[in-house]
Structures are given as structure tokens and as C-alpha cells.
Length: 254
Image 1 (cartoon, rainbow, N blue to C red):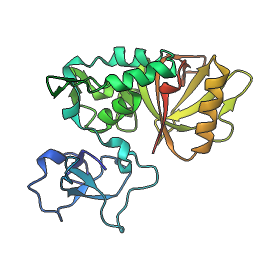
Image 2 (image 1 turned 90 degrees about the horizontal axis):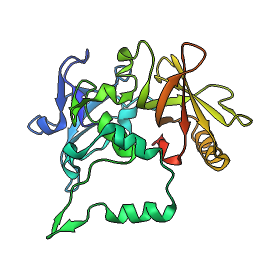
Image 3 (image 1 turned 180 degrees about the vertical axis):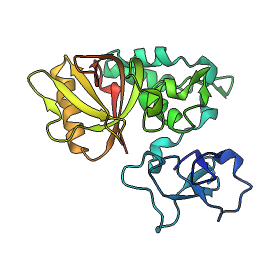
Image 4 (image 1 turned 45 degrees about the vertical axis):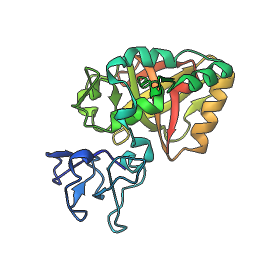
């Protein structure tokens, strides 16, 4: 599903699902993924979710691993406090290793009520940040920051001609062949997913976290992944590395 689509095959005229509710359900729209020929149609609110675009005809489905076929793209902006969001603060928070008890306590605190009204929190988790970024074009803004300045994916690849530096989330696929080194506790991913131009090296210190992420990537080796890191170039021009301190920095896109 997708929160936006394009009216034309050349992807020059964007339309948001919130704007398309007056459109006929048979009106054809095009997937934000330029390599995907899925025919999208507006789907009405079902009582718990806002309108969204979906490939409803089996003859024109999403291609394999198209990010816009995933429910991970669903993002309800009304549930979060955009003005309170700081991208760098959120990414830095993902680097912190938290005990399970603290995670559970934080989860309970989300959405607490004052005087019967829910308190809107800023987005915090990697999945929330990823969903927000995928729910709008990369030239859009969220909390004063352009989407392309937060995520490297196939849509924003044009912007990263000189590499990927600093705090960024990266949509990636595993490196073909051997994608890990047990001795050095490194995992190798490729992004953008279409070209695989850059190699992203995930460097682990903790054996337990390394083994968990390596197993998760192996078990989902044909899927895409999103990684939050503070990236810097190493050796070769097209290699970038980040320390992975927490399993909260890596998620499978399902």
C-alpha cells in the first residue's frame, strides 16, 4: 500500500491518497517505484485506516520486493507530533542499548492520556521513521527536513552521487554471496537496491547482537532491510560503515 502515487506513467504528477477520495475507484494511478508497473487504485477508509493506494488487479501487481507493496509504508501522521520530531535525536536514540524492562516501560508510556486526551508523541522507532519517509515523495518535508536528507533509497539515489554520510536510514538488500564475516563481526548490504552502487558495512561489537542480525538477514535474505546508522567512508570510494550498537538499528521490510 502507498500513501501517494502518480497520475502519469512518467511520474511527474504526484497525488496523495487524502486528495484522491473523490476519484472514481477505477481511476488508474502509478506506483512511486519507477521500476514497478503496478496499477494502483484508491481504497476507501475501512474504519481504522485512512485512504491508501493499492494494486487491486492481479494482472498488474507490484514487482517482487517493491517497497510500496508492503504494509510497512502505512503511516498515520495524525497519531504523531511532527513538530516535536528531531531526526538526529531519533537516530541517536536508536544507538542506545536499552534493557528489555526499559523498552516495555517506554512502550507503556506511549500514548498516555491527560484529561482524557491522548498525548501525541514524535515518531521514535526505526519502523516509524521508515514508514514516514516512504509515505511521501523525497522532496517533501517533515519537521522541517526533506525526506531525501533522511533516507537513501531508489527514489533519493540521485541525491547521493558522492556517497552517504552522517545519520541516515538506508533501504538495502543483502550482498550477493557471502554477506558476513564472523571473525570481524561485519555484515555487508547493498544500496540503493536497484543499482547496488554502494556497499554498506554493518560493524558489530557485541557477539549476541551480531548473531541475531546475521540470522535475521539470512532467514529473510530475499527481502529488503532498513538500517539506521552514522555512516562514514572507508577505504574504497563506494564503501560506507556504521557501528551497530542495538538490534533496533536494523529491521526487515515485510
